[in-house]
Length: 459
Ligand code: ARG
Image (cartoon, rainbow, N blue to C red):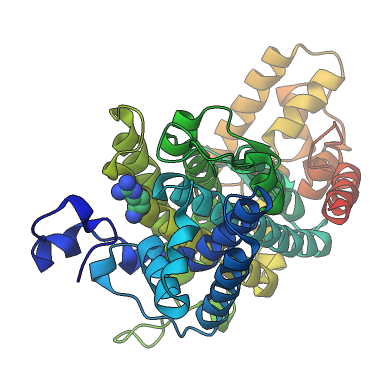
């Protein structure tokens, strides 16, 4: 098959070489974006008088019918035609004749492919933002139901202070909120139009880049044609926002895995999001949470991969840049899948409230309360800390918890202890009283839930 660029060649590459260089196996994902880019380009060519209205009408019709076929998955691609751009151009020309060849006037595949990817990432970024909100909605709903469900809060994976389960869930809500903001802010740079930059230097034709930018819904054009065709920072931003998001999901995944273990039994995942074992009949595994934790690695890899591809490239376009696509597609698929799974998993998980609460009773996570109690009565905190530390040691020796000590034992440790100490030691009291801004106190949580709900509604 003669190449669309075959003019200066006397022989063709062998098939396996063609195949190695081709991107059609994956860049067909860009088919609709490529056609939209071409539609805008041809409209501009005719408005600027670069091609005739009749030719433009023919080309436009052809592009529309290709779009219909693409939407019903009827297009077939050939690896001999290298990539989506050449495949579509050749099908267009097959359909409408040599006039199809006018579409590429004043354009290069270099600005074309960059345009496609900006369009693609805009669509995907908006979709991901909506999916983040779905997951936030699921977190919010569970949090609302569990404001007064208390659990041990941890540091160093050791029980630290009791907290509300809602507060713990809402921590992830706010992480996701910032993730969404990162995607939102990246849209500013996704919405730049590279179209019309040509191969690298612009074009001699009197094109109108502002017009194509407007037709494609971009806010601005790249100022510099070399920059427009050779940077992929907008993809790097997407990959890095996605890496951070996946890191958050992975941490929550890890907690879900722990919480659903027999050691914790804080939650039980719905059957729809769990799997069994082929050998051990009793098993119910949190596979999806594990898989998302695992898939985080591939997203980081995609970010590292592209950073590395780009780091030594001289301006402008280099074929290395074809390597920008698979990691991007893979990341889109991983992130959208993970968010959908998480929304469902959180929405349907069962919370073992009693189990969580009893965990807060059988530990020392109320020790800080005791120290605060003494300091509230004027003892310097360092001293209170020491006194309570000794009480804890006493309990450890006696194999009991703080609330099991008698009032005279407390008084022996310090005369300022009174009978109200038992109420203070109650973990619910400990949670309730932490009403500093952003704390786990019930009042603070209710405020936070209102703010969160307003955030979700605002969009
Ligand atoms: N398939 C190529 C890519 O993804 C399209 C651009 C090719 N341009 C070129 N001059 N070879 O990067």
